[in-house]
Length: 343
Image 1 (cartoon, rainbow, N blue to C red):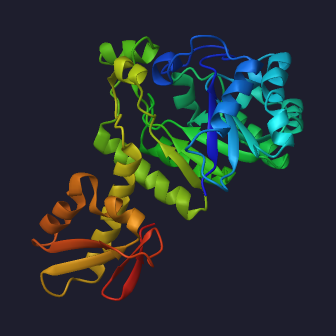
Image 2: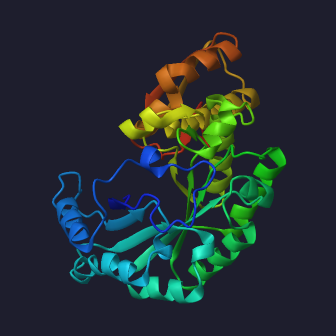
Image 3: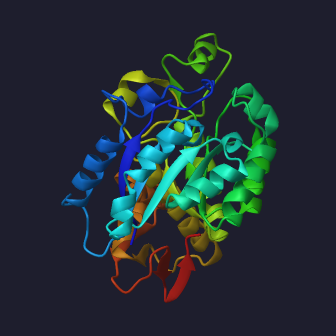
């Protein structure tokens, strides 16, 4: 069961500078006041009483945005300390936070572990130093590798965040980035295709015609490729695309944002898997019925049933039907008595 997350946001707090693409007030929403330890206590209590918390689900408190480990040690202690009573009573089972790879010295990792942190997410963004430099990240791929190793050595879970579509990126750098991430073997990855947000240096490059973001089609293709490779390696992809908010909608200038980008990506993966199986094992007759897990039906059919029409068109007007089977494992489909893996 997926953990129940109680989120807190620290937009830009602790960040040493602004990256080329970043405006967290627009992409992550605004806070009316700075986060305090009493605010964390109230937020955790509210989260634990939420009707969305399912019985038996583990609970994680998450500090997103900003650079948590670049906050003063006193501030870190206050925020993490507010979660400690809930950890002690086993009402909360873990803490996760996000940070930069160059803000994780050994003593910081040891401190976080002592305060109950269980997962650290690193904003790697790319493993190509040229792309990192053009994006004004202020760190290198080596910084990411070293920080990741410290996290794993401490026995904490490692998460990595990637931004496909940054300036200077090409197919070779994408492949290098993916291989670099696979080599680090994180527990989880988030894929956030780069967007053009108002008030960022990237927006100025875009307005001058010096930067062209990925199209939605390109982003779906890249994320599908990455998702398959990561999943095959046993790495969980926890999110694809930024969550839609009124602030993001107002601030978005260009780029491959879609409120259901993750669904589009997984539908594309299903389409390719089904198309491949039809090429290997041609259909007998004009009707094809595939059986999938009930929760996979919408992904197999595609957004607005687009997979069905694409498959019909690509394979001589076949009539494709997708039927749910409660005994069918997720990520697999059954056709003509054989089982096929989506990944």
